[in-house]
Structures are given as structure tokens and as C-alpha cells.
Amino acid sequence: MMEKMIFGRYVPADSVIHRMDPRSKLIIVLLFVCVVFIANNAITYGALVVYTLLMLAMSKVPMRFVFGGLKLVFILIIFTFLMHIFLTREGPIIFELGWFKVYEEGLRQGIFISLRFFLLILITSILTLTTAPIAITDGLESLLGPLKKLKFPVHELALMMSIALRFIPTLMEETDKIMKAQSARGVEFSSGPVKDRVMAIIPLLIPLFVSSFKRAEELATAMEARGYRGGDGRTRYRKLVWSGIDTLMLLLLLALTILLIIFRT
Image 1 (cartoon, rainbow, N blue to C red):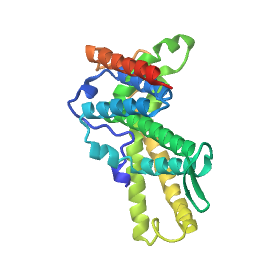
Image 2: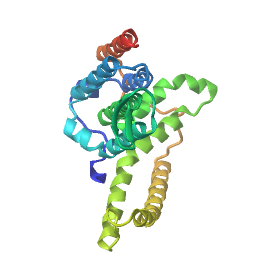
Image 3: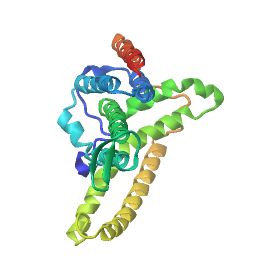
């Protein structure tokens, strides 16, 4: 499971989405997070699904790889759906079996909110899968550039986010190694009572935290040894170039927004 996690991973490919400016992709993701809350019926959610799947197809990242890496997310989505089914008691009853009753509003909210959560996760995954961490850093620093006049540490913030994204797969791999090492010594992570499974996680967290702090110290030492002193006076080898495809993709999102507003009930 850990080996298939996709959060923070970059998949090199020659696609339209990969060639886009990281600034436009960050803007699209930010706007999509706002636009997704406009949808409130089957037509508008259908339009969002079509748009997201179109972006995924244009990225040329295998769908099997993406959906395989979201298995843990699917568990959370199913849990969210069931919580609405059990706890929301509004509208007419559409199914009844003894004490268990499914209300129309509970089913509706369960489907729509779970779908909204899934689309947000998928669109942000497309961003990280098609954009190198250093490109995300440059794009974020460029977008937040005006805040430098207010003495806001833009470069440090962008670098911190980039390092966090970069180390997610590394920590997942480290977790997998520790789990395998402890499983070889008789620790059970997938069987036995729930209490025992929870208690088995504690010995897993301690070496993981120790390893994380060690990696952070090594990274800080390496940056100091190379003369890193922040963003003042730094130049970039790769220049950000806004192209026509970036404008086109933003216009496509704008068209989607107008469509959602028109068909919103």
C-alpha cells in the first residue's frame, strides 16, 4: 500500500499538462477548489467529473496508477458517505430495513460531498504528478511575489512547501521499511483486535520520527555547506514562460464556472 502512494510524487511525461506553466496550474487548482462548491445537482457535478477526467487524460498519467494510489482516500470517502447515510435524517424515506432507514437528503449529501472530496483530491494529485517540486516552488514564489514588499518570507514559504511535498514519498518508503522490519520480528499490523493494532503503531512512530529529524538535519547541513542564504540575490536556471495553452486552460475553467452557475439550482 505504501509503495503505491502518489502524494508528492512526480511522474515525468510529455503531455500538455506537464508543459504548462506551474503558475497556471497552481491558479487552476486554487480556482477549482472554489468552483467545486458551486455545484449542487447532478448536472453540475457531472460537468466537474468530466472536466477532472479530461485533465487526467491530458496529463497522460495512467489512470490505473492514479486510482491505485488513492485507495486510502477511497476508504475515507466511503466512510464520509456512510456517515451521511446514517446521520442525516431529512427528506422522505427511500429505504427502510428494521431500524435502518435511508433518507433522500442523506443519500444526496453523501453522494455529492463524497464526490466533491474525491474531485479535490484528484485535481491536487494531478498537480503534483505533473509538476516537479522545484517548479512548484518557483511558481508559488512568483505568484506570492507582491507580498515581498510587505516583508513576507515568500521564498522560505515556497521552499518549505516544496521540501514537504518532496519528502512525502520518502517518508512513505521509510514507513514501509520499518513496517516490514517489525513484521519480520513478529509485530502484527493487519490482524488481531483493534486495540492491539493501534498499540502496534506506537513502536512504528518512534523510529519514523527519529528518521525524519535525522533527514531534516542532514538536509539543513547540506544546504549550509552549499552556501544557501535564502532567496535574496538568487537566480534561476529555469525560466517560467506563460504560453497560450495556459491561457486556454484558464478559459476552459472559466467556461466550466459559467456552466455551473447557469445550471445551479
